[in-house]
Length: 279
Image 1 (cartoon, rainbow, N blue to C red):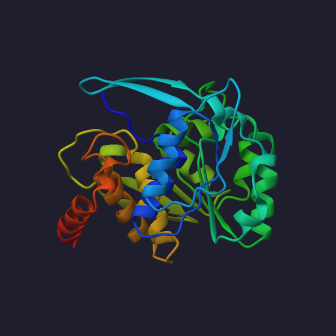
Image 2: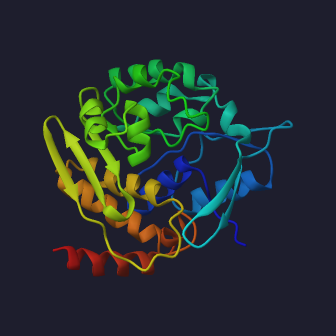
Image 3: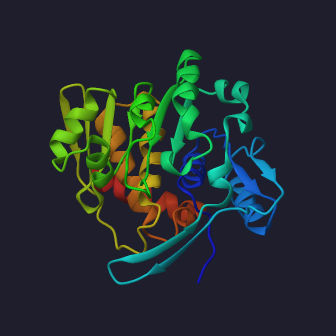
Protein backbone atom coordinates (compact mmCIF):
# COMPACT_ATOMS: atom_id res chain seq x y z
CA UNK A 1 0.00 0.00 0.00
CA UNK A 2 0.95 3.65 -0.23
CA UNK A 3 -0.21 6.76 1.61
CA UNK A 4 -0.72 9.89 -0.50
CA UNK A 5 -2.50 13.23 -0.47
CA UNK A 6 -6.21 12.87 -1.22
CA UNK A 7 -9.48 14.82 -1.49
CA UNK A 8 -10.62 16.49 -4.67
CA UNK A 9 -9.93 20.03 -3.46
CA UNK A 10 -6.47 19.20 -2.13
CA UNK A 11 -5.47 17.52 -5.40
CA UNK A 12 -6.65 20.55 -7.41
CA UNK A 13 -4.81 22.94 -5.08
CA UNK A 14 -1.57 20.94 -5.08
CA UNK A 15 -1.47 20.42 -8.83
CA UNK A 16 -2.52 23.96 -9.66
CA UNK A 17 0.38 25.21 -7.54
CA UNK A 18 2.74 22.72 -9.21
CA UNK A 19 1.81 24.27 -12.57
CA UNK A 20 3.07 27.64 -11.34
CA UNK A 21 0.03 29.34 -9.80
CA UNK A 22 -0.30 31.08 -6.43
CA UNK A 23 -2.82 28.95 -4.56
CA UNK A 24 -4.40 29.28 -1.14
CA UNK A 25 -6.23 26.35 0.43
CA UNK A 26 -9.08 26.68 2.93
CA UNK A 27 -10.28 23.63 4.81
CA UNK A 28 -10.96 22.06 8.18
CA UNK A 29 -8.84 19.10 9.32
CA UNK A 30 -8.28 17.11 12.47
CA UNK A 31 -5.42 17.61 14.87
CA UNK A 32 -3.94 14.22 13.99
CA UNK A 33 -1.16 12.57 12.02
CA UNK A 34 -3.12 12.32 8.77
CA UNK A 35 -3.93 16.01 8.94
CA UNK A 36 -0.26 16.83 9.38
CA UNK A 37 0.68 14.66 6.40
CA UNK A 38 -1.86 16.52 4.25
CA UNK A 39 -0.55 19.90 5.40
CA UNK A 40 3.04 18.89 4.79
CA UNK A 41 2.29 17.69 1.26
CA UNK A 42 0.36 20.85 0.37
CA UNK A 43 3.02 23.14 1.82
CA UNK A 44 5.79 21.26 0.03
CA UNK A 45 3.84 21.76 -3.19
CA UNK A 46 3.80 25.53 -2.68
CA UNK A 47 0.22 25.91 -1.44
CA UNK A 48 -0.57 28.56 1.20
CA UNK A 49 -2.11 26.58 4.09
CA UNK A 50 -2.30 29.46 6.57
CA UNK A 51 -6.12 29.42 6.52
CA UNK A 52 -6.55 25.68 7.09
CA UNK A 53 -8.28 25.25 10.46
CA UNK A 54 -7.07 22.38 12.64
CA UNK A 55 -9.62 21.23 15.22
CA UNK A 56 -9.44 18.93 18.22
CA UNK A 57 -12.11 16.45 19.19
CA UNK A 58 -13.42 13.05 18.19
CA UNK A 59 -13.84 13.88 14.48
CA UNK A 60 -10.59 13.28 12.63
CA UNK A 61 -9.11 14.12 9.23
CA UNK A 62 -10.91 12.37 6.37
CA UNK A 63 -9.46 9.28 4.73
CA UNK A 64 -10.30 7.28 1.60
CA UNK A 65 -9.19 3.69 1.24
CA UNK A 66 -8.89 2.54 -2.37
CA UNK A 67 -8.61 -1.12 -3.32
CA UNK A 68 -7.45 -1.19 -6.94
CA UNK A 69 -8.59 -4.04 -9.20
CA UNK A 70 -8.04 -4.73 -12.89
CA UNK A 71 -10.31 -2.20 -14.61
CA UNK A 72 -12.26 -1.18 -11.48
CA UNK A 73 -11.78 -0.26 -7.84
CA UNK A 74 -13.46 -0.27 -4.46
CA UNK A 75 -13.46 3.02 -2.53
CA UNK A 76 -14.47 3.57 1.09
CA UNK A 77 -14.39 7.10 2.54
CA UNK A 78 -14.44 8.33 6.12
CA UNK A 79 -15.41 11.98 5.55
CA UNK A 80 -14.36 13.17 9.00
CA UNK A 81 -13.89 16.93 9.22
CA UNK A 82 -14.97 17.44 5.59
CA UNK A 83 -18.59 17.28 6.74
CA UNK A 84 -17.95 19.89 9.44
CA UNK A 85 -16.51 22.82 7.47
CA UNK A 86 -18.83 25.81 7.95
CA UNK A 87 -19.15 29.37 6.73
CA UNK A 88 -17.60 30.55 10.02
CA UNK A 89 -14.40 28.65 9.16
CA UNK A 90 -13.82 30.89 6.14
CA UNK A 91 -11.83 34.11 6.09
CA UNK A 92 -13.80 36.09 3.53
CA UNK A 93 -11.20 38.86 3.19
CA UNK A 94 -8.60 36.21 2.38
CA UNK A 95 -10.86 34.60 -0.21
CA UNK A 96 -11.77 37.95 -1.75
CA UNK A 97 -8.10 38.87 -2.17
CA UNK A 98 -7.76 36.29 -4.96
CA UNK A 99 -8.92 36.39 -8.59
CA UNK A 100 -10.60 33.00 -8.71
CA UNK A 101 -12.35 30.61 -6.32
CA UNK A 102 -12.71 26.87 -6.90
CA UNK A 103 -14.97 24.59 -4.88
CA UNK A 104 -14.84 20.81 -4.94
CA UNK A 105 -17.17 18.12 -3.56
CA UNK A 106 -20.38 20.12 -3.24
CA UNK A 107 -22.26 17.22 -1.65
CA UNK A 108 -19.57 16.40 0.90
CA UNK A 109 -19.64 19.98 2.21
CA UNK A 110 -22.60 19.28 4.46
CA UNK A 111 -21.83 22.00 6.99
CA UNK A 112 -21.13 24.63 4.34
CA UNK A 113 -23.61 23.62 1.65
CA UNK A 114 -26.66 25.62 2.82
CA UNK A 115 -24.61 28.82 2.50
CA UNK A 116 -22.69 28.03 -0.70
CA UNK A 117 -25.05 30.09 -2.91
CA UNK A 118 -24.59 33.08 -0.58
CA UNK A 119 -20.82 32.57 -0.50
CA UNK A 120 -20.70 32.46 -4.30
CA UNK A 121 -22.85 35.59 -4.54
CA UNK A 122 -20.51 37.51 -2.25
CA UNK A 123 -17.40 36.32 -4.08
CA UNK A 124 -18.88 37.34 -7.44
CA UNK A 125 -19.69 40.76 -5.99
CA UNK A 126 -16.03 40.99 -4.93
CA UNK A 127 -14.98 40.44 -8.55
CA UNK A 128 -13.88 36.79 -8.49
CA UNK A 129 -14.58 34.17 -11.10
CA UNK A 130 -15.85 30.84 -9.73
CA UNK A 131 -15.44 27.22 -10.79
CA UNK A 132 -17.23 24.20 -9.34
CA UNK A 133 -16.59 20.47 -9.52
CA UNK A 134 -19.54 18.90 -7.72
CA UNK A 135 -18.01 15.42 -7.67
CA UNK A 136 -20.47 12.67 -6.79
CA UNK A 137 -23.54 12.89 -4.59
CA UNK A 138 -23.35 9.85 -2.26
CA UNK A 139 -27.13 10.05 -1.74
CA UNK A 140 -27.70 10.32 -5.52
CA UNK A 141 -30.31 13.04 -5.03
CA UNK A 142 -28.55 15.93 -6.81
CA UNK A 143 -30.59 18.60 -5.08
CA UNK A 144 -29.53 20.50 -1.94
CA UNK A 145 -29.41 23.99 -3.42
CA UNK A 146 -27.12 23.15 -6.34
CA UNK A 147 -29.25 25.02 -8.87
CA UNK A 148 -29.11 28.15 -6.73
CA UNK A 149 -25.32 27.89 -6.55
CA UNK A 150 -24.94 27.37 -10.31
CA UNK A 151 -26.30 30.86 -10.99
CA UNK A 152 -22.97 32.28 -9.79
CA UNK A 153 -20.62 29.71 -11.36
CA UNK A 154 -18.45 30.65 -14.37
CA UNK A 155 -17.03 27.17 -15.07
CA UNK A 156 -18.74 23.88 -14.20
CA UNK A 157 -16.45 20.82 -14.32
CA UNK A 158 -18.43 17.55 -13.96
CA UNK A 159 -17.66 14.19 -15.48
CA UNK A 160 -20.11 12.56 -17.86
CA UNK A 161 -22.22 10.81 -15.22
CA UNK A 162 -22.32 13.86 -12.98
CA UNK A 163 -23.45 16.11 -15.84
CA UNK A 164 -26.36 13.79 -16.56
CA UNK A 165 -27.36 13.55 -12.93
CA UNK A 166 -27.16 17.31 -12.36
CA UNK A 167 -29.36 17.94 -15.40
CA UNK A 168 -31.67 15.01 -14.60
CA UNK A 169 -31.43 13.45 -18.06
CA UNK A 170 -29.75 10.36 -19.52
CA UNK A 171 -28.85 12.21 -22.72
CA UNK A 172 -25.43 13.82 -22.43
CA UNK A 173 -25.97 16.37 -25.23
CA UNK A 174 -29.25 17.44 -23.66
CA UNK A 175 -27.55 17.66 -20.25
CA UNK A 176 -24.77 19.90 -21.54
CA UNK A 177 -27.22 22.12 -23.41
CA UNK A 178 -29.40 22.45 -20.31
CA UNK A 179 -26.49 23.30 -18.02
CA UNK A 180 -25.08 25.78 -20.57
CA UNK A 181 -28.29 27.80 -20.20
CA UNK A 182 -27.27 28.46 -16.59
CA UNK A 183 -23.46 28.34 -16.52
CA UNK A 184 -21.32 30.30 -19.06
CA UNK A 185 -18.79 27.47 -19.55
CA UNK A 186 -19.74 23.81 -19.06
CA UNK A 187 -16.81 21.38 -19.28
CA UNK A 188 -17.48 17.64 -19.22
CA UNK A 189 -14.67 15.15 -18.61
CA UNK A 190 -15.06 12.02 -20.72
CA UNK A 191 -12.18 9.91 -19.40
CA UNK A 192 -10.44 7.98 -22.15
CA UNK A 193 -12.53 9.90 -24.73
CA UNK A 194 -11.05 13.27 -23.75
CA UNK A 195 -13.29 16.21 -22.86
CA UNK A 196 -15.97 18.44 -24.30
CA UNK A 197 -17.20 21.92 -23.44
CA UNK A 198 -19.99 24.29 -24.33
CA UNK A 199 -19.90 28.08 -24.15
CA UNK A 200 -23.16 29.63 -25.25
CA UNK A 201 -24.14 27.81 -28.43
CA UNK A 202 -20.57 26.76 -29.28
CA UNK A 203 -19.42 23.21 -28.58
CA UNK A 204 -15.78 22.17 -28.39
CA UNK A 205 -14.22 18.70 -28.27
CA UNK A 206 -10.67 17.85 -27.19
CA UNK A 207 -9.16 14.39 -27.80
CA UNK A 208 -7.48 12.43 -25.00
CA UNK A 209 -3.74 12.23 -24.44
CA UNK A 210 -2.61 8.62 -24.88
CA UNK A 211 -0.46 7.29 -22.02
CA UNK A 212 0.40 4.01 -20.31
CA UNK A 213 -2.14 4.11 -17.50
CA UNK A 214 -0.90 3.43 -13.97
CA UNK A 215 -3.73 4.87 -11.85
CA UNK A 216 -6.75 7.01 -12.77
CA UNK A 217 -7.41 8.23 -9.21
CA UNK A 218 -7.41 12.03 -9.19
CA UNK A 219 -7.28 12.38 -12.98
CA UNK A 220 -10.46 14.46 -13.05
CA UNK A 221 -9.18 16.78 -10.34
CA UNK A 222 -5.87 17.09 -12.20
CA UNK A 223 -7.84 17.96 -15.33
CA UNK A 224 -9.47 20.77 -13.33
CA UNK A 225 -6.05 22.10 -12.37
CA UNK A 226 -4.77 21.99 -15.96
CA UNK A 227 -7.91 23.63 -17.33
CA UNK A 228 -7.93 26.40 -14.72
CA UNK A 229 -4.21 27.05 -15.23
CA UNK A 230 -5.00 28.21 -18.78
CA UNK A 231 -8.41 29.71 -17.99
CA UNK A 232 -6.85 32.08 -15.46
CA UNK A 233 -4.48 33.29 -18.17
CA UNK A 234 -7.30 34.15 -20.54
CA UNK A 235 -6.64 31.28 -22.95
CA UNK A 236 -9.29 30.19 -25.44
CA UNK A 237 -11.51 27.26 -24.54
CA UNK A 238 -9.75 24.81 -26.86
CA UNK A 239 -6.40 25.52 -25.19
CA UNK A 240 -7.97 25.14 -21.75
CA UNK A 241 -9.43 21.77 -22.70
CA UNK A 242 -6.18 20.52 -24.20
CA UNK A 243 -4.22 21.52 -21.10
CA UNK A 244 -6.82 19.88 -18.88
CA UNK A 245 -6.45 16.63 -20.80
CA UNK A 246 -2.67 16.92 -20.57
CA UNK A 247 -2.71 17.42 -16.80
CA UNK A 248 -5.23 14.62 -16.31
CA UNK A 249 -3.08 12.27 -18.37
CA UNK A 250 0.04 13.20 -16.42
CA UNK A 251 -1.75 12.31 -13.20
CA UNK A 252 -2.43 8.76 -14.42
CA UNK A 253 1.29 8.01 -14.90
CA UNK A 254 1.85 7.64 -11.15
CA UNK A 255 -0.29 6.18 -8.37
CA UNK A 256 -2.42 8.79 -6.60
CA UNK A 257 -3.62 12.16 -7.86
CA UNK A 258 -0.54 14.23 -6.98
CA UNK A 259 2.48 11.92 -7.20
CA UNK A 260 3.20 12.65 -10.88
CA UNK A 261 3.10 16.40 -10.13
CA UNK A 262 5.49 16.07 -7.17
CA UNK A 263 8.34 15.02 -9.48
CA UNK A 264 9.42 18.18 -11.39
CA UNK A 265 11.61 16.32 -13.87
CA UNK A 266 8.93 13.76 -14.66
CA UNK A 267 6.35 16.53 -15.07
CA UNK A 268 8.64 18.57 -17.34
CA UNK A 269 9.51 15.61 -19.58
CA UNK A 270 5.86 14.59 -19.86
CA UNK A 271 4.67 18.06 -20.87
CA UNK A 272 7.51 18.56 -23.34
CA UNK A 273 6.91 15.19 -25.00
CA UNK A 274 3.14 15.38 -25.24
CA UNK A 275 2.81 19.08 -26.05
CA UNK A 276 5.09 18.59 -29.06
CA UNK A 277 3.06 15.56 -30.11
CA UNK A 278 -0.18 17.56 -29.83
CA UNK A 279 1.18 20.29 -32.13
